[in-house]
Image (cartoon, rainbow, N blue to C red; front, side, top):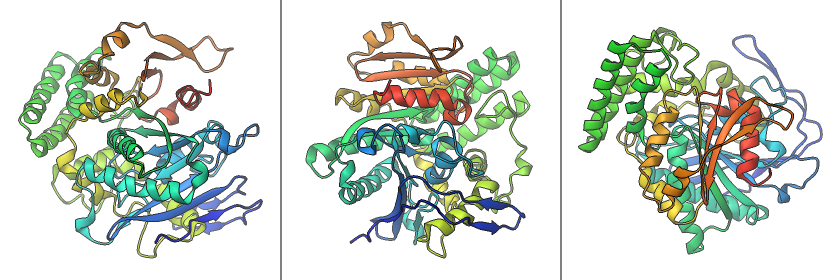
Length: 449
């Protein structure tokens, strides 16, 4: 049996001052809302951590607002860390209030998944998830436990929002959750899934890198030819079902892109990537292509200042983190164990969701490269959903941050249970780059605007 969830409901939380090795001092501010967190044992020797914030709207009770679960990418990126403190949670990574927190319009559930991510941990190496099926199965155990121990959320509209590889996981999780609800094993009011800059069809992303970068004056003719050539090799490997080889070629394609663009940032093309030499890792001495992929796609989610926060004041606040577990300590292993799953497409899962009547939202940042909008549009066109032609024929509509603004912030197209949001001036991490628009989108998706 799982232990009772730990929760923090206080009017004033003592100031927690921790001097860290860097000399940084964090002020943990007083909490105004109710928070709950706990571990769930999803498999033997596999423990998953979740952290819930009850909505703090001044006008509505939490029971009148939706519950949003946020899933981070990587795999190995922490929702309780990055998604919480860098994107949509009540506080930023300096513990200052975030004006665009989603908590004003929804309760927020952050889950560190797959097991081994963030504060989640495994006790044996063979326990890491190696495919999407295991990731989804583990989450079903967690969600069943969560809704059983927090019955007040069983009737609240429940949405899964995600980012990057978290989108691929969200699709698989959403389908299994839909089935579990039909079977009666999980009681919740599942109302939709949102796939943000999502790794749904990796090969479509890779194939679009060249044309996208060329159109943005970041490749010349020769560079376009080189990027397109290695992208075709990735496609060939995927078509043959050689997914580990495709993963290796994916890594090669990224290196070709960096060489031809003078180090463009895969997460926002208007910025430049840090040199690989600046990324310190215990694995740097290994020449594995997986290590380079890990350094490029997970290390930035576990940046030093965030790690100091999570392993310092936050760990002390939570009080339940095992002594031998450090936040992000198993992230590399999470990533490496998913090697065979990276390049597998999940388009058919999205099709199943649409056919089942599940609300599906796709949203993407205009300046993202790793999952550029061209690639997202490409896999959406491959859907076999019967209403896709009608969706395609619609004209998109402009969106503005507020009624007083004339600046276009996004475009949207929606038909029945499929919606697509084009978020302007945003990279891979949409809520970080365009917090106001991300909040507005969440409200639109959850029927609050």
